[in-house]
Length: 318
Ligand SMILES: [Zn+2]
Image (cartoon, rainbow, N blue to C red; front, side, top):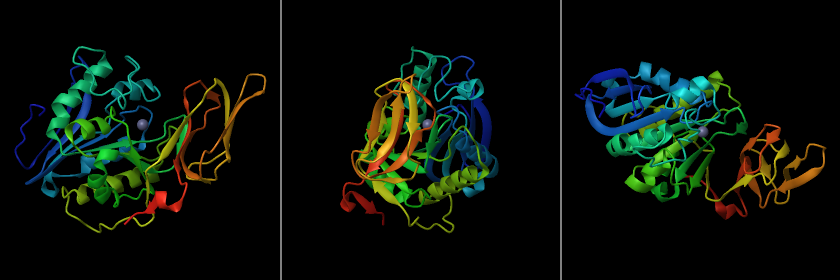
């Protein structure tokens, strides 16, 4: 896959060039001593989202081929140029959002070529994608995970072991975890934990624990104290609220908060303090995340929440 020996019982750490000259993504490749699934673990698809990066670096150091059935491809710093440039989410070379631009193009901009390289060289060789994210410097969020609607029956038996309260069904099709699901039938999870451009130790530890649980549930690591998380909800309807104005955004909710239909989520004012728009919950729901930056541009996300119009739409898992 990377031109490296893939014989069982080997571990390699190297920089991989994804068809962009000079671009170097650090990779740890662990070929287990027993056959099994190949799992791709990624973080820093969006720059500025840190806990998953540290969790994967630690696991790449710790895990050994003797523990593994199958193969692990660990990439803690995919958007490494954005990591050092401290961009918000995107690739600094061309502004590409690597969670929106699949399948990319072989002769396009650097972001398009990176996506194309994953789409043609990496995804066809893997059985599962676990992609770690976080609210970046602009966002506050509660731990949650996203999965493709068409993959629900394959994802829920795995996701139930992650200590994440909200499992969010998504219709996205062009992201780093969703494109392989829709086009190659490879199940994937986008896990969100931590926010604000910070990297608190407990978020890193919780991400590590969830990655290990996922690998155990997939049979790549031996199952050890694997128990379903009891307080888990499947969210099948979500609202992604965008600002209809540029101005100053005053959020009035917290991540993880239950809101009632009609409750104020926040409002946008102009530069003279005049109200431009007040945003209300369209239904009873749970806030996944919100933008905490005062500055907001027209079209930027304000908040996202899962809809709970009646208890039947939010089912206790298991
Ligand atoms: Zn992200």
